[in-house]
Length: 294
Image (cartoon, rainbow, N blue to C red; front, side, top):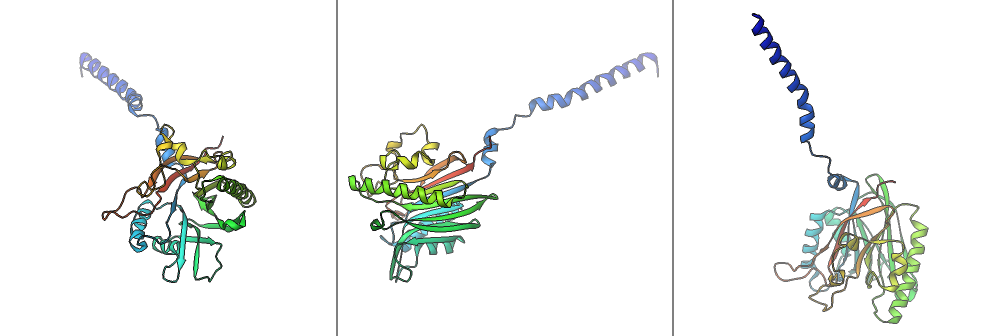
């Protein structure tokens, strides 16, 4: 090989080596940075639904098909149900839904076991159950209950509470709800065992109502936390086909130092193809995640 040819080859090799060394840096420059939103989407958490079933009114056998189809699609980790009924010709509604979904359930009622008619609240879950309980809320003559489950989510315990507070809108109703909230908080303090808390149900009160102020001082409103720029006064969980004024009274509250609300939306807010509604309430679905440790 001549001197000129050798020099040309050496120069080409040096240039090739320089390009090869530069390629990793260039390739790294083209890789987008990690998306914190994607990381948040993958973070451990749970899906929760609350829904007032409107007991067995208005053709329950047809309504339940719509409800079951949506719950199967969502596959929430837990479901809180209100106005659950069982009677001689109606299988317990929570039991039926749980059997179709493959979930476990607890049903609480002030009606004694074995009574021809039982009415109350329920919690359903597809996760392992670590503890369960129930409580009759004060004042006892209002016949209100709360169901409790502690479940395991992503290897961590989470407490679920489901309730349905007094429905009256007068001063007496407000006073009763305030008493029920105080008793509910005592029950939670006695049973939560330090694990994160989620409280779901039909509270028959707006989030900013005075009768819920003690509850709101401890727990966040999942729907309001997600929809921070929404006119929440115009959002209703009462079915507008049945009720004129919008009223958001069905809530999923969460412990803000332990959990974060990432998504929330209404369910069953449209009729089925035949024009039949799932209930006189809309449901609420939310996705909660464990808060990052400080």
